[in-house]
Length: 217
Image (tube, rainbow, N blue to C red; front, side, top):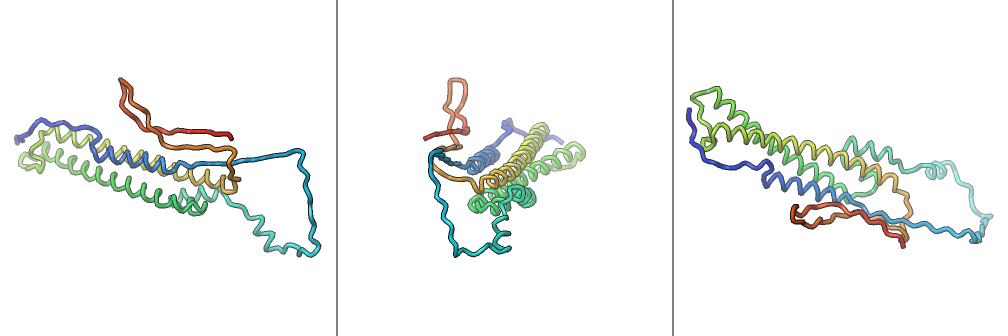
């Protein structure tokens, strides 16, 4: 059966897919954390120790609480099992919407591209195997439907990769925050990781990137 068609172009990454990738970088930047710490030491300092004779000895319950430490390993395991759980354990509650927002966004984009891929795949197979088949995409030639199928398959697989990277970042973030849970925060040394724009050149377009700045005061 002959199908009418018109000449059209099919960019591999359409607007919706590009928007999805932009969401990935925005969420990646949202994970960027400014870490500040300071440490001062004076070898000539004089220390005075005061002993309170009226102080009561610590009981076993108090000692147990003091021995309990925040566990980076537990934070890592929690985020591995349930993304965002490690962030809650680390008391970084503001990161939970980012984690679940990213999972929801990439999950939606994956399902969207997979649905289109299945439709084009079924349509292309029916065109080849059924001479009486009437395609809902009659305006496209067989070669164009094949290209649409391959493009949506590529986009679907791309979102699987991006989602996997986002999942790993969720685990790494929980582990790092777990190790920095007791970190002394100050103003002497600042390590700042933030998004930045790479200006265009005669041969390239503007790009997004990350800027890592270390300041010692």
